[in-house]
Image (cartoon, rainbow, N blue to C red):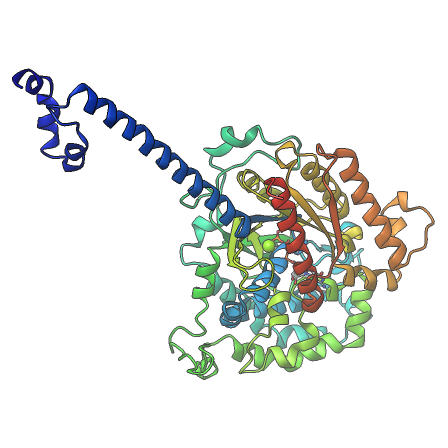
Length: 556
Ligand SMILES: Nc1nc2c(ncn2[C@@H]2O[C@H](COP(=O)(O)OP(=O)(O)OP(=O)(O)O)[C@@H](O)[C@H]2O)c(=O)[nH]1
Ligand SMILES: [Mg+2]
């Protein structure tokens, strides 16, 4: 029928390049009855199609029920133990990857050890007569103040460590070594990383999320990932000597320090690029391109490279050992209330093992290694057995220093659970980044800002009251909580009473400030360097998070 033909010409033309549409087009000579039958068929087909869609949707939901994704954010102040907790997750769920990376941690461990030695020498420096009260016991922040009270250095030295000059002289190679290690760990274009300076773009976007001063509005770091989140960068704590000055300085250029003067030191950190980069950067004597063991896949043979840092350490091992064991040195450190054994990256009791030529870090060594996080590090894993089988976990480890907290906010949006770490041993310490602020006070304020945050009101929160081992040791050494926290009053200064007091304090803050009164708070006393106990706690926490997550999704 010519008329009918005229009704369809455009469609006909379009179908030339669209065979499927052509097949679906009604015939040109379709009668009214045929049309009615076709429409009915189409309605029936649509019903079938809709029911298939619904079935698929239900299947997807079922899949989600049995294989949910969980995003966990580790929060807490700097040195609270977040990265250590992340390492424990890795050790538990990706043991072979963790093991493969052990060798790269050698550089960090060496640097931690060298810095401990330098810390001791700084404290013994003749001019270093007194300690800043605020800095006691805090490796990262402890500073030595020049205050010879008019006495000549030799007079002070005479009454203190008689071998000081010998130690200083024999350990001088460590000054260069420290610089070398930092250079090895930092990327060649370190400048960019050391100046992860404020630029603005995410400010406006996230400023509204913040409701108090502890969570400053975000500033995007110099490098960001594809999704606009800050790229992970790692900072190595570093002190820079500022001769004849007691000021805090922040340049990373003028290094190394010398041990010979008694100037005041303050925390200074240099940045190292992403974890991958720093691990690659430390190729254990890149000249020799050390071969990998066929058996373990680990690099070996570095000890044959004369440039490897182990040789300097090995040569200084005996003197380091003598220094650390010298009773005069210990007395001097005690007087200055320098509890190095509480410091991060403490390896002084293990000098012969750590400085051995064929030293490979153990899991425990890696857990103790201190590398300050800057930005955010992400780790994913799935669990291959048990009730949480197949669950995709994504753990975010953030930098906890005050200038790092702006990077937290973007992660609040799709987080399912937070593990908040509060190092309760730190009641007598101050923040590296601000020596006027007590660490515990900072933790409490930070805790309050997290639990009261409305964006996080449906997020499960697990609290790790961490560094319990150090708390116990500190209390046993006679440090009194009520000297630092008047509200503790005259309660007993033992571990049980103090730890319960802290649990109550953090618990009450949650109760008072949470916008979601239904939310349960799970509190654990932890020492996250203790692998066995931490793995048990992690398993419990995993189950809590999964259950809470399913509840929030209204799937149970
Ligand atoms: N003794 C002891 N040491 C701990 C414990 N938790 C962490 N540490 C050590 O404390 C240091 C700091 O821990 P990190 O995990 O690096 O701290 P962080 O919270 O990631 O710090 P930032 O990256 O600066 O935010 C490391 O050397 C850890 O080995 C603990 O429970 N007991
Ligand atoms: Mg960290």
